[in-house]
Amino acid sequence: MATHKKFKPAEPESGPKKNVVVFGSSGQGKTSILNLLCGLDLATSDAAIGCTFDSTEIAFEEFNFIDTAGLNETDSGTVTAEASLLKLVKLLKSLQNGVALLVFVKRQGKLLAHDKANYDMFVNEMTKGAIPILCLITGCEEDAGVDMQRWPTANEAHFNAAGMEFASIVGCCAKKSSNPAFEAIFAPIRVKSKQLVLDAIRGHAAAENVELPNTSEVLRRMWNKFCGFFGSFLKPFVLVSESLQKLFLKITGDPVKAKALAGEVEGL
Image 1 (cartoon, rainbow, N blue to C red):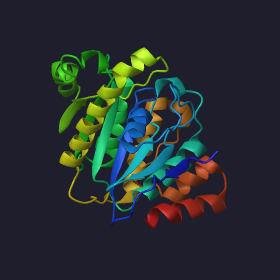
Image 2 (cartoon, rainbow, N blue to C red; image 1 turned 45 degrees about the horizontal axis):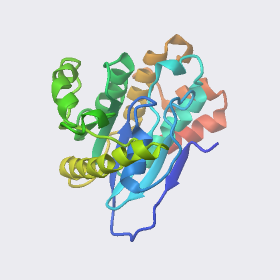
Image 3 (cartoon, helix red, strand yellow; image 1 turned 180 degrees about the horizontal axis):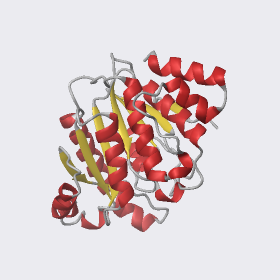
């Protein structure tokens, strides 16, 4: 199965698009949000076992959304080093023109270790805090009759205490229902949410894509964070002085593949 997919709704092309990386744990509503924004019907899932670093590109208006599969505690013992490394290389290749915005998606609820790990992976390791970051809180439909920003406002301090800072935290709803009575309630809330989210994305995205500094170093940092999250079975970590070709060789066991992969990353 392909690990990096592209979708492009019918629309006129108009210049370079801003790359927007959408990340967070599985089951938080990332794909549902993108379906809502882009008018698509991509399959959603509550599990992403073995799919860490998978990515799907969706071109929409002035943006190129990159929907990523993040770190999930339930993946431990199911991911493989080689598959994950190959997916990470593909993800970084898709971002070689830079990133204009990071979007962290989380469903209402307790802040968990893998939420922080995903934040650290993309904000601290990949972009070193150089890219604006927006937080979308899904599952806010129950507050729609009052204020969908109630939960984000009440819990902003918890994010800050965990070292997770955002340009803005926006409550929204992308939920659909097969029950006509419930769908009649959700549909207008989704319309409101779509506008809120698009306004936030347009308001916080950088004026143009910001290039990632030194892709080889980004890969090293992200790989070490990945290994640290899942534990020793995914070692080796990348040493500061270690060449990427040596790392790829240790993981793939294939000198030809290792050399080719190292060339791809170092050429970005």
